[in-house]
Image 1 (cartoon, one colour):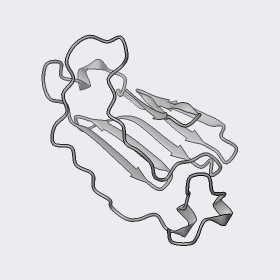
Image 2: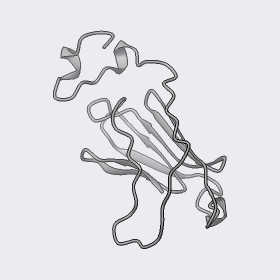
Image 3: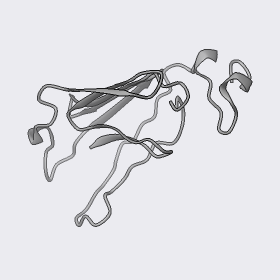
Length: 128
């Protein structure tokens, strides 16, 4: 379990970590109390993942417990929109099942949070 940037920065926060990235991309990592305990997962049962992305903040909860969090103030590399991936680690055996997947857009990003692929931030049209 981790929060991962597929487009270059890779792992932003591992399980049990809170990462705060400054404007230059330097991360300050601090522990999230009890987040790395394996007890949060229920083997052989359904586990509930709740991912909240609000502006530069991403929080991952598993079964109601915060397990990883990122505050990304690196405007040059932050992604305020993108693709949500459900992954199964390569080389792992077993069965992974997903059900009841819901995506809820809480509020569109404002003009200060615009990022279009391959378009410099200053050239992006306002409100898109």
